[in-house]
Length: 162
Image (cartoon, rainbow, N blue to C red; front, side, top):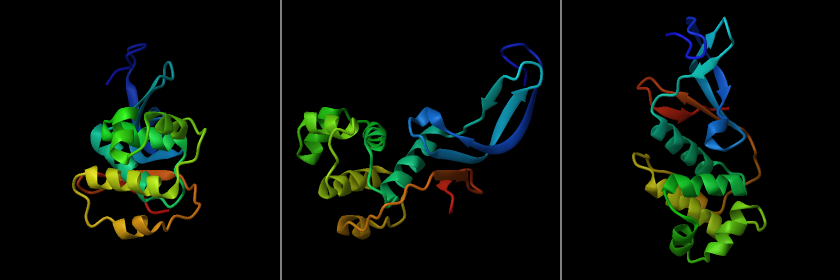
């Protein structure tokens, strides 16, 4: 591969990178291919299976025990492919309420948060027995640990254990 900026060859290696393009500040991709140009410093990150990656991020957020913040709520809504109005309708809320949640002007209450988490997990294909009961019971506790994702032997994105 050659650099699109200067045409020089790219050198590939594997590393852990922060994935800011998803809109969340604490998502890291572990052991992904990074290609760099030695001539101009241009860099490209190879991210296969983007839809699957975003599903893995959504599941990790839904299962993470910390309360959701506005940025995470917006990510989950967009993952579900819903407008604020559509999500509000599904949750029995007003569109303005979803907007306040996403802009951190109002904290999402526990019942609404559990419902959003369940919508994400139920809407996510291929989950093996998600711990829905724990989420429904509200067993969330503060933990802002970064989300780290790695590809398994089949090439699927999975949360990496801390």
